[in-house]
Image 1 (spheres, rainbow, N blue to C red):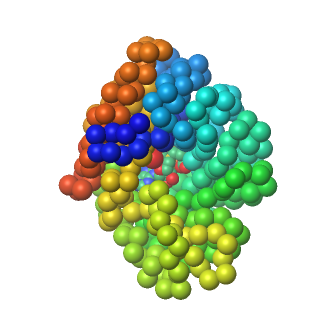
Image 2 (tube, rainbow, N blue to C red):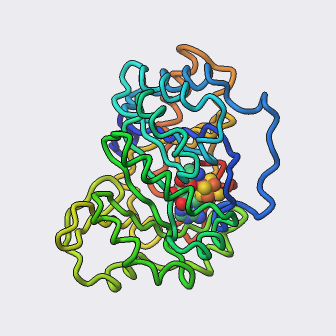
Length: 313
Ligand code: SAM
Ligand code: SF4
């Protein structure tokens, strides 16, 4: 359906857990998060109901995210359920990749079409410094498993951080020679880590400076694409801070505790738990109607009130 600003809203980012096997410095505190009671997290059947209601409101694409979606019990069933929902044309996932060696093929067989792997560094020490876990080799094996599983697309996402991984732009972009798109994401000042994020913020224009050989390759969704000469994959820039993409926003988010967020950086949350059938559908429709024209980052702050691991990125 179209929102009040004539944007076609067709994309749901669904967080299936706020737990994670990493502790990325820009996303959550070192000590992790307090585990919610089992009953506070959406059950698989509730997720199925929500996806069905969203599809009835015009959602055609679902991205499973988290926290880390692969630590959620039943993730393969969730994937299968979403993929089988009438009206849903595409189910994809954003993951840190650490558990993909075990799950890539199972997810593909359950109907997952595309996977985005978050990989901020190819240097073990930098990776450990950012994620606070020693899992680079598992994440790299996860990327290989994804490439071998027959997905329609495998992409790598790297959050650009001044003084941390900005020396690795060329090395990360070189993955495009293997056919994967590599997207650099600007660090957003969100949640408890907002101050750290601001300190390490770097505009995506740093990628263009580091790689003057990039050839423009158009825009798609929230990313602007380029190509390295002779690479089959693309280098993408996702610039939520330096370039506002709100006019092209096509998404809504649902948190793992069942709150619909019409905008990533706004405070508004609409409870979906306890609702079913027509009432659920009507609530989703009304929530899409509440999508603000622009996000609060334009005023320098996120008003979200949650950490990224709770929202799903
Ligand atoms: N755990 C999965 C992962 O890391 O891919 C999925 C959830 S994570 C919250 C989704 C995406 O949000 C990741 O690509 C991550 O790098 C990004 N992200 C988290 N915090 C961010 C921040 N403050 N600024 C920009 N991107 C962020
Ligand atoms: Fe976990 Fe993803 Fe957040 Fe990193 S960005 S701590 S992998 S949820």
